[in-house]
Image (cartoon, rainbow, N blue to C red; front, top):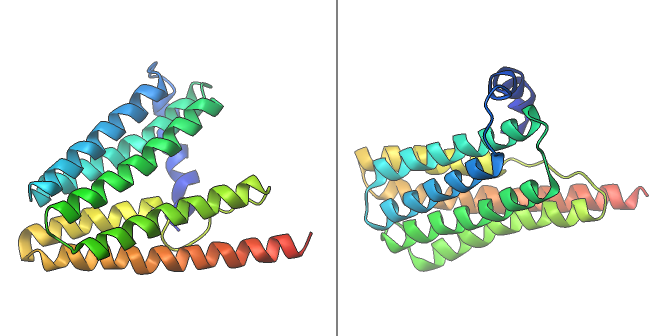
Length: 190
């Protein structure tokens, strides 16, 4: 859903970042490290700092792609690395939230599964030649839910973080259903 804003953001960010000569893979690694730090902060129950680190990781995830495009350094390996570390980042943050006791283990496992399945269904559809970047809860939306949940829970109480995780589950599985249906329609029309 937020990916619809990507062309506008790229129009603003890309010209600025094209002047920066940094390997985009380094930024990808820094985004991953920020996500691991967020996971740790969640595990030790520091929600506000965890939320800030999720925001930093998400911002760097936008920047790495813009750097690659702006400097004509986009590579297949860079895209592969970014996607792989995004999955590790998502998993570590959910694990940190669960370990921190903000949600039960079953809820944490379902959130982990929903997040991974959203990405898997897209990758599988695209492996069949069907662009599938659709749905209400792509990665950007899931990160925003975590950020808002962490900030609000740091003020109003832990239960808000569990609500955020449940929202990730519900919207994640809804997105999976959207992508399966969309892919079925596209494959049926071939």
